[in-house]
Amino acid sequence: MAEATRTSARSRKRAPYANGERKRAELVDAAFRAFAEQGYQSLSVRQLAELIGTSHTLLLHHFGSKEALLEAVLVRREELEGPWRQGLIDDRGLLAAVPEVMRHNAGIRGVIQLDVTLRAEADRPDHPARAFIRRRDTDFVRSIRSELERELGAGRLKPGLDLGILARQIVSLIEGIQIAWLYDDSIDMAAHLEAFMELIRNPQ
Image (cartoon, rainbow, N blue to C red; front, side, top):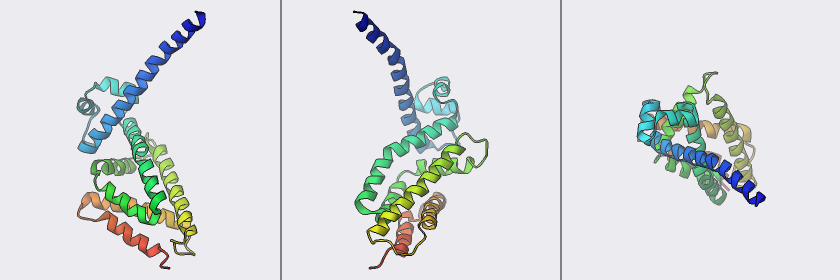
């Protein structure tokens, strides 16, 4: 009986935490949709809360600031899209997969705009997302280099290239072409990345 009572007490203690985490996840998913549709800069916390269907007090309780909520949204985006993107790379290799990823990105303008906006704003040393952006950039370059090593091993990449420099070039091209596309969506991002991949592809 005593053990059952202790188990019940532990369950009651876990319930508020689980409910809080579930609510936080729901808010992140709703903010993802709101940011993608409305953008980031144009929304105040109150406006964002109204779009989500909650109060700004609850939003701030869970995240503390709009910037922190945006960071949570970007983390969630990676959780949702990371497995699909990695699966594509594993199946087709980096050189073929990157243009496909860019075609996909052309369908999520609002999310790309968020990413670009946050990156530009986070250059300030006091910006709450600065450490997140730097860490993500480092991870991105490292992962691209790792995939380039796989491409080289598979014979699909030209030999003799500096993979560290090449990884940074690919990341910079992805980020740069997305900015250009936000100003002019007639730009075919996939075509530009495909052309670059052909330059570094082993012709044999």
